[in-house]
Picture 1 (spheres, rainbow, N blue to C red):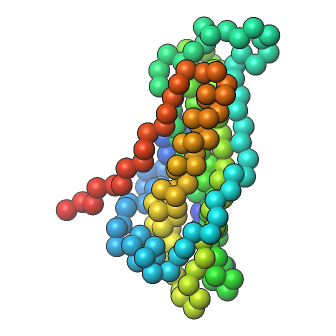
Picture 2 (picture 1 turned 30 degrees about the vertical axis):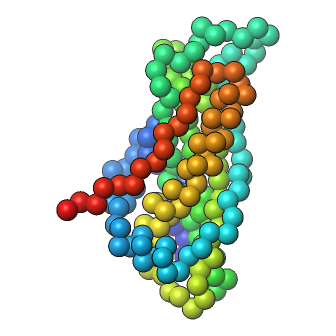
Length: 177
């Protein structure tokens, strides 16, 4: 049986883009994340599916450093896509990360977008609740993907000769008492 997560055409973002606060991301449920992670899922693979880097001074033979971003970049994460195939014992997730370096003009001076796919094995014979899988994808799988995104962002920004920027480490949500 195959279960699919949220509609990938829904361009809801956390961070740099507007989001629907009512259901994305879901409230952190430590018990749900722990039930799925500890007992039934193991990471198999993380792949870069695609990336796009754009800069406003791309047509100039001599770069203009006058368009250096005046403020820190905005980091965004699109609503993740996921599919659970219990028959095959696999969960697949896709995350799209967006980083924009804003300026005073209509055009962002630099923007980097990257998509990563994460694959997990599921313990044979286990039936997972859709809400538990959704918790796992939004919290644990995101934690698994974040270091790959940070490295890709940092190395691309450095290769492009842009002002140094290191994305923050992702923290664990505080459990409400």
